[in-house]
Image 1 (spheres, rainbow, N blue to C red):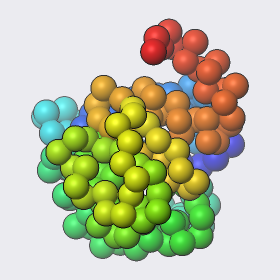
Image 2: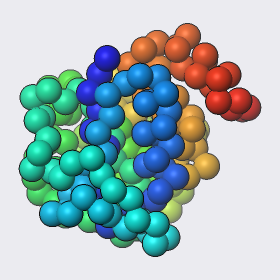
Image 3: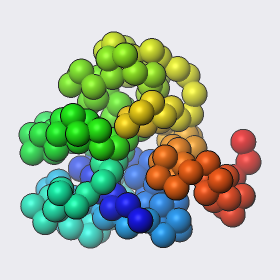
Image 4: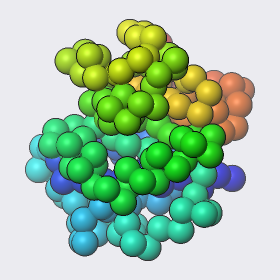
Length: 183
């Protein structure tokens, strides 16, 4: 079982964040919803309030295997502006640990140079931020230790891509069937 931290900033996209939490918890992965604010309660881009499991200062990154960055506005900008999280993103990429981002959030990886030579996707209006990436217009793209997703409508394929990376293709296909996901 992997330990996954999904980061919630004010203005996050609720479907992109919570779909990943749901799929990975159904697969019995250890998922922590982490607020980057000082409060566990975080408000989404559409006014939905979610209570995180932890605040950022409570995360043990030595025991964390995966970082998940949901999109949304201004959530993506708030994630990128939070220097302690960006330090961890950089450290995870450098160490070859799994870093995932969906919708606008892959722009963060592009801005930090982590997509150079990688295949990636993002929300259409953020594609020009995927600096150095081979752009794909697919729901989710796995390239080594980086997984990117296209947007809210791709939240299930994105979550299944993370599951595939962690537990294999058979587990992802079984989950897709279990949740009645039709391509």
